[in-house]
Length: 235
Image 1 (tube, one colour):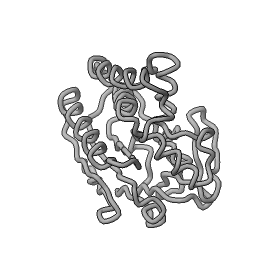
Image 2: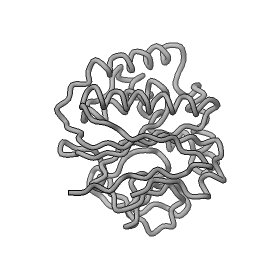
Image 3: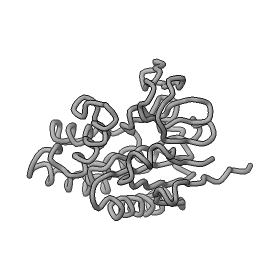
C-alpha cells in the first residue's frame, strides 16, 4: 500500500509539506492524559493572544481553500475547527487515545492531522481531485458523493476517506476501539511548514514508542519525494 499526492496537487500547491507515520499494535486502553494537557495548554495560551483565524498556519489553509473554490469560512481545515472548539469550550472531546493525541498536536501547532484505520482503506491512498464517482461514508452512516474537483483522500476502491481536504475521517476509516494499524497524515502550507511537520511527526513517533511500546515508520513528503510505502503485513 502506498500513500501519495497526485501531480495536480503538487503543481497547484507547491508550498505543501506532508508528514506520514505508520504503526501497528495500537490499542484503546492507553492513558495519554498527561501528554494532552501540555499540548492543550500551549494552544490555549496562543488563543488567549488572538483567535485562530489570525494564525499564519490557518491563514495558509484558508488561502488554499479559496484557491480550491471552497469558501474558507464555510469549509475549514480540521486544525481550525478544533481550535474554534477549544476556544469556545476550553477543551476537546475524548474519542480514542490516539485520535485525542493527534487532535492535541493539531491544536498545539495549528496544523491538520488525519488519523486513519488502515483496515478500512482499500489499496493505495491518493490525495487528488475527485472525479465525482467516489463514495464517502459519513460518521453518521450516510453515503455522499464528493463533487468533481474537490480534494479527497481516495483509495483504489473509489472510497473517499476525507472530503474537501478537511482531514476529517470517513466512517469507513475512523479509528475505533478495535483499531490496530494506523496511518497518520500531517499537512501544512505555511512558511516554515517543513520543520513544523518534521517536529510533529517525531513527537508522535516518540509518543507511540513510550505510550504504546510500538515502533513507527515515518516520512516527510515533497514534490521530489512524493510517496510513502506501507509494508504489507504477513501472517
